[in-house]
Amino acid sequence: MFDLKDDIDPAESFQIKWQDSCVVVIPAANVEGMRWDLIEPAAAIIFGPLKSQNVPMVIFDLSHVNYFGSVFLALLLRCHKLVKSRGGELVLCGPSDMARELLRVTSLDTLWAIYDSREEALSALAT
Image (cartoon, rainbow, N blue to C red; front, side):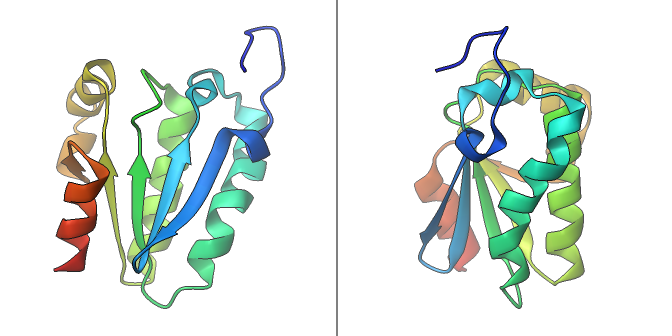
């Protein structure tokens, strides 16, 4: 699906699903190579459903992503800011060992709750 020389289409890089009262954002593996000029189109895709919620509860399911860089981190932070400003909560689930280490090194693991599975994240947000 992703070749380093191909452009990344933000519309194909994120799946958005509703599960219970939560918005689940599922990035594809190709977000590892996301460029800065694609952050706005990606944000528009993700923020659309969030802006329709009074108190958005959001899960980023990272189970398809091995690693990500500063562009994806910037997108996560923007999403976090939007969700928090509306009284909601953003959590992560399913990060790879490399992604978990990146979150630890950047201290972002103190900003977001991180769960091993989507089921755990859904359970935590339901309480």
